[in-house]
Length: 140
View (cartoon, helix red, strand yellow):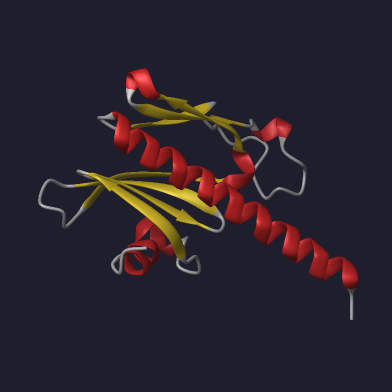
């Protein structure tokens, strides 16, 4: 992941992601996608590249599916509603969340790159969760 990303994660949303390390990123012009073990963070930079104009994030546990839409040059993520998540998920039950998020990619090659990055992030999250569950169940 790019060297500027740990600092970016420390500064956005009041430092909410400061403890998360970037594991994969893709930059598409003024957009940047950052995968951590916990979530996908979408950044939109100012044209000068020195200010974040917009951001959203999706915890991996909310991702229901990922669609590669080659003809539209975008990647669509379908998301679980908070009602579909386990009660101990950490998501507030009354939170308003969109049913999907999409990333406009511009061309077929970038679309594939974004799709692969998101799928890699999901896989790393799944592996990490499985290892944590295994460690917790094996005990001392």
